[in-house]
Amino acid sequence: QLEDEQELGADALSRIALLNQQLRALRRQIGALEQALEASESRDRESQTQLADLGRRLNVALAQRVQILNRFRSDFFGRLRDILAERSGSEVVGDRFVFQSEVSFPSGSDALNPAGQEELAKLAAELTALEAEIPDDIDWVLRVDGHTDSRQITGGGRFRSNWDLSAARAISVVQFLIDQGVSPLRLVAAGFGEFQPIIDEENQAAYDRNRRIELKLTQR
View 1 (cartoon, helix red, strand yellow):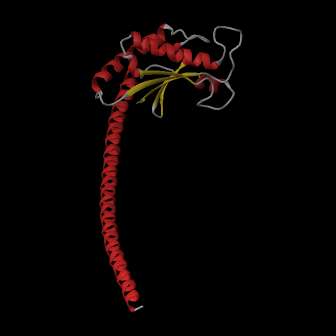
View 2: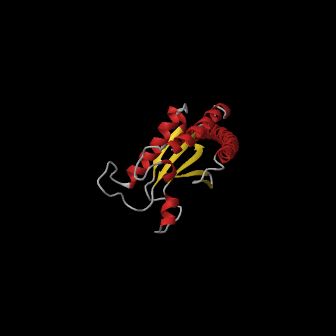
């Protein structure tokens, strides 16, 4: 019986020794995992710092480009004011230059009249000069927006709606500028119909103000 108990005790000690070995190995593995986790967290913190720094630098670069474009926009509008100072039916509204449609187009038409072509030729010359001045990394465009008054087109002509007429007039302006040498890459045509009025009223003065072509120098 004593010999049996001694054998059992030796077996238990052997198992305890084996468990201790396994425990030490497990602790080493846990330590290695903790080190790997700390290294990963450190890399993550460095990456987040780098991303944050990159984001700040990108924001600064974008802000600088916006400032450059704003400076050229201000200069461009200043030139237009000088060129069109004695022309009735044009004005600056916020960041847009506004031409009253009846000065440039016959009623209900998208064909530029001689007076409209004359003024747009001056505009084209300024745009061509501007293309050479603005740095190549500033992705700018001149957006040409057509607007009508709230009265609907009648009579069954080629324009089915105010959308059609406003877009067609904007395209006519863009096409004329391209014919004058302005790069088509720097032009955008948009039609707004009657849905962006300057004066939201139903009277002749409002109709006259709302029928217009707007020019906006902006980023693409």
